[in-house]
Length: 256
Image (cartoon, rainbow, N blue to C red; front, side):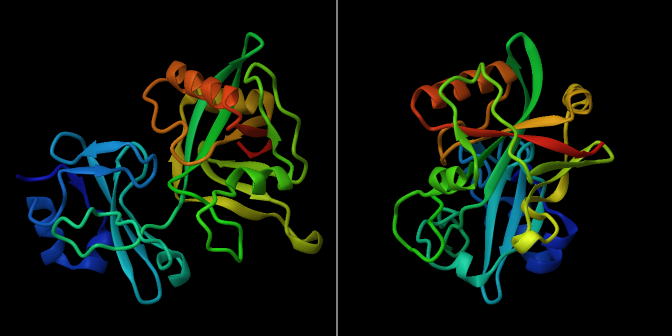
């Protein structure tokens, strides 16, 4: 059965017209999949789906994502990132099984705090994040962020402290990056960077320009997932806070 797939021109250029046509015809793409961004189930036979090609120096991994989570694109990563994980992104249906690498998924939304709306981002990896230099199964995502200055959130109804040196880059009304301090006093560098600028709602942009601050929440993989409404996102954040799985920081807005 044909799939409702978005295959970007750069993805088609990498995999070739023949393979792209096979994907669109449903010959080599799974119907059901786990979104490589939010890790919740998707169905390429019923909902628009993006093809995302992770490319290393020697290996390429084709993954699938809800179009609302990620656009179809080619993502350049190091070979070390592609190797070392064992789970298959594709599920082995029609394509060679390939290792999965964790990437950071980012969701924007408005969060009600003390009766006022605050622009927020929720950062959730697609899998466990290992501490640099280790290969163990432990997820070090939250401990690493706490070491950077993110604070545990016992209650979402409280605005977190500002994390100095970090910022959220918004340009021409689109989200481009979360910046962290550079090494040895150098210029800021991207901690997370959108492969294509992400659209935010007019309400989110208005609130961000008004407050000049964005609340950035972070959770371990599989904690919040893709929430279709902001009230459901808030419920998921409240549950994560109650479980001790939520850290956050307020960051100045860079750009407009």
